[in-house]
Image 1 (tube, rainbow, N blue to C red):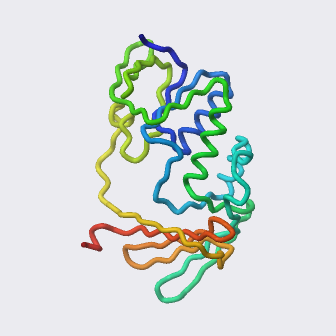
Image 2 (cartoon, rainbow, N blue to C red):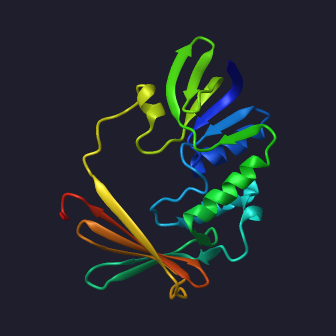
Image 3 (cartoon, rainbow, N blue to C red):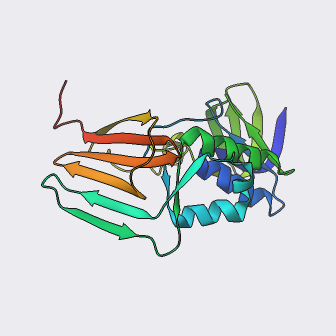
Amino acid sequence: MVLDTDIFISGGGPAGLCAGIVLARQGLRTIICERRAYPIDKVCGQGIMPTGVADLKALGVSRYLPVGSYYPFKGISYHSRCGDIAVSSFSEGAGWGMQRPVLSGALRRCAEAEPNLTVMSDVGVVALTRDLDGTTVKTSDGRRLKTRLLVGADGLNSKIRAWSGLDGPPQKLNRWGARQHYRSKPWSECVEVHWKDGVEAYVTPCGENLVEIAFLWRRDLFKD
């Protein structure tokens, strides 16, 4: 049996969920397919810029955030290896430091409140076939869905982009990331960015007593 939908979105991260909410509110039957279980975690800086905060408020996501689950920061401070510091304050308002699963959970709850939107988790896309009437998607749980529009929100190694023939050349710069949270009162009103050759560290206040430190480094410069 083939089920019909207007929009099929592969990937239920922030981009996929926000796109699904917007499209569903236009009266379009929308399905989001996410291969992982919610809430979804990811190694990232966990800072949402002021324009992103404004978008979350406009979508109504903020009402699904638990009290105290984010921390406002006013800008970004850059710290060089020689001790120089440059500070840039936002003109649009505060950003939010927030753990990624908190954002994921709030976005999903907001999405599930939309009557035209279905969110499937623990389900991946395994095959696509295209014809003049649209695209048929086969999922890992055996479903077949016919969609008028296919949206690829499935990340850096997007299967949708590859199947669509839109892949570019391989990235020459490969990097590793790692992060850790610490129970500590934030000591700065900014996200701190510390860097030296080939490595960056991001310090993000995520709560009244929570700070995240994330590292991003070039694989070719730092070997095991």
